[in-house]
Length: 440
Ligand code: UDX
Image (cartoon, rainbow, N blue to C red; front, side, top):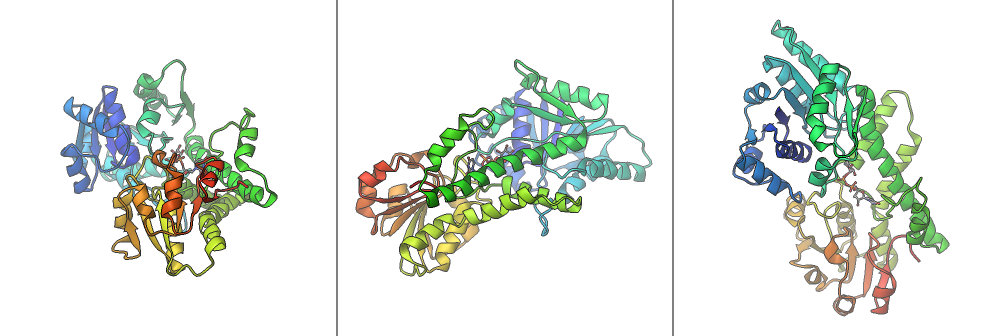
């Protein structure tokens, strides 16, 4: 099949590369010439495990191409994926200007049947707006060409995006005409293994499904975080509680980890956008409002513990921070808890020595020339001259440190663990004061 993907961010690039991997001819469009240059030169503008290999292989095979030429892109694919950004507006709703610009371009330049697929996470009702934008452009040209608009949300996780695309647990397709449904079945046939993973539904339900999934997961996390706070007060251990409830198949083990708050490009933005959609529709989403407020508070939990230990005034104190990315295996710093932690430490007069395996360049870009923030070459170097260690992201390389060395190097041997990485007995046996989340 001939496929155009508009937008070469996480979703667009992963989708384009994986569809090429299945033998399709894929053209990826981005208006940012720098991104397209990097891709044409064989590079990858984002850090995503395995993606470089898939891109390289398919570029070499002549199935994956990149362009900044809108007209070429619209003419190329019968299937047109829209995978552009939907950044939050000031009021929290998803900003659709890029999605609708892409739709207008298609309407302005198409000459034959197109299946236009919303892959970006967009509020319920967006497909109608896309349909209207295309119709409007066609009307301006006095043309009456056939096209379908489909909602096909993406559920990929950063750090496992290629795997998630290649082996999806479900493929949600919101489509309302037979021709489009047939095309979608054909497109995703190679990704179906032993059972049909396509869940076909109306467009609005598909649009809501994406938000419902992320909001449900965010809710689980905020609920566990709140229980962790309670466990601390009651002298219980959230890790044991997690195991105790996860064994119930109705609950399950996934996404029950208490920590220092969720971040990333999806959960915070989607929770906000769904709250806004609710408000617009006259439905107050009480649970989701609480989920958001609980998460905002949870990002301060490590700083609260630091203040409890060292006092409000942290001037002259230095903190080692392990992990900056919003989660492991990515350099993504969007809504990362580390940003809040670092800012709050600065506010109280402290300095920070940070280490992250991949997100330090991105952190430098965000914090700019910040004299209070130093970057270490490895986790142990970050501890030099530091009073205490604050762990924000659960990278594998932090999982079995030399506790005796940590104790020897830190001025005041306290470890604040925002991700509950260790059996508390181990750091404590080395003489460290170990302060995890929700554990006695
Ligand atoms: C998420 C969804 O998982 C994915 O399906 C959707 O398409 C996009 O949003 P992603 O943002 O890449 O993916 O990260 P994810 O692995 O879901 O983690 C999100 C945040 O939740 C991270 O900050 C993580 O640290 C936190 N988290 C996750 C917890 O605090 N506890 C958990 O148990 C799980």
